[in-house]
Image (cartoon, rainbow, N blue to C red; front, side, top):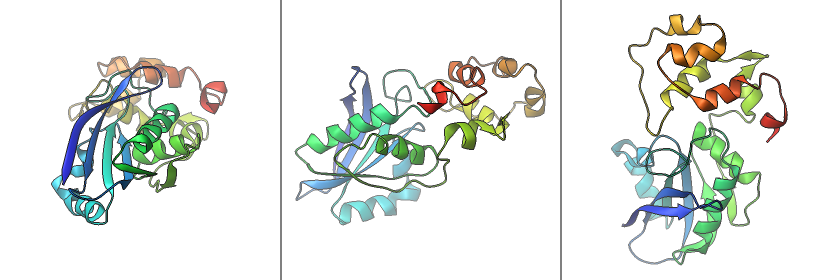
Length: 212
């Protein structure tokens, strides 16, 4: 296996995203499997997933993992679920590399599934396949506001993803937090400042913000 670690891939606005590349030692160019996630680009190459990585490499694929904007080693500010342009640019960059045969697929579950849909809606020419799973297709109706009510599940996710790295919250009294009113004060009650959460709460109805 050949590795290219923490390659900084520049997006259209100049922000660079940390990208780890693994490919077979010999041969090429290769088709690419891309995983974009906010949970550290090493999460999909843990010992538990070693068999999957080996399968991709032995099957003649390059396997690429990327920290989304604002997370871990990537530059910029994290704006959850706003992944379309970065997804498009990442696929386009991969397709131009000498070790890529111009064909890119994307994989992953949960948020990694959503990054696939966001890229696909812009139809990058090199994107040949996506395999999204365990995610909603609509951020507003499927994640943030269910039947018109703000989801407390996304509150826990938002606090855990505030900042560049994950922040486990084993000592938070969630019932106390969930009883905080108005909702805009919930993150502060837990000791956090979460701009993207405030932005979600500022748009409790489907509008141009969610349509984008």
